[in-house]
Image (cartoon, rainbow, N blue to C red):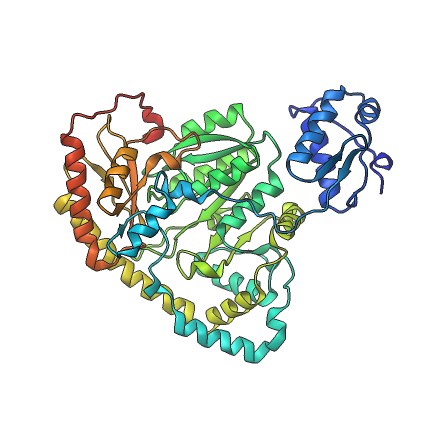
Length: 494
């Protein structure tokens, strides 16, 4: 179909710029397959006249479409619809996770096996249930033969979605199978949501600090990120509502339980109030359930989704940190109102998640092996947690403040004001200790005195010595005269 046969209407009463509206409408026509590849778009002047807008409005819209590779231009011929590349997952700059640490330096350090890595949130290899999973994969191959290697529907393998629905009942989450979308990990889920819901210049609210992968995904869509400070009992609701009075975000991205990087967990009061605000200001909440299964006091905090009575919460869950990262498996619970957009974005990303892995996980959960695995990693992580807490108490300088979470993998520590965690990070590398400086967890990369350490990639045997060495390095930094004088905004470091 030719675009000139389609009635395009722009809303001049809307707060959204006309060129953004035009870009969004043409983009939808392309993604929905209404405008076929190599279809020529109308000349700029002709379309501007038809829509009664300035030429620059059409130029800006076409430029945005070209930036996303949805159209291409031929000199002297015009603008044409591009062939969509179905392997265009957002490339996240993972070097930011390691900050200034060069990849070659990491390889060099790891060659000698003497690096104590408090920066990595990937489980150690010994936690992967290789034998059990190998057994399940063989059962699947014997049962399903070649069918195991076929593409699954983009929404996901139906029996797995059915199993996930039953699994979620343990967490008091009720949903229909039709609301469950299988994804290739939480990062893809965030990326898919970004592709489906965010247009150029849209606003997204996040906690501050927050997960770096989410920041990167939102920035890749040219979203404007407004950071809301997080306290030990959850997001700052007064600050949040003040921002909601002035801005209308596409959604609010939160990690209510064992938040990354801080380890903070929202109080139930704050969870309920957050849902009230979402309803009051008519916005969606994206809940990234990072590590709810890892609780060290046998108290599992309620998910935001389990309290959601008005279908405001999009729930994302990955199996990466609690199972095996290389499987690239997770799921989302999405409202039916955005299902079409999500399916299109998923198909563009990778068509569908591995059918073999979906079938294997389905059987793994049904056989009770997943529950067995969760119990085992809780036991191991609790031991690491206890050693780290005692080591912090024994060795960490008194000037260092830190938060002890009730679960999860992360601890959030702060140097005294005037000292930068980036500098501490650089000093630690020289001593084969890896930490994550706080600056990378902020959208604007502010200078920070905070840093994160994790128990995920350190064995019990090295935790105490690692914290002792880290404490020695911190003492050296504190005793030096190299104090950085910089503007420090306490609102973002609550």
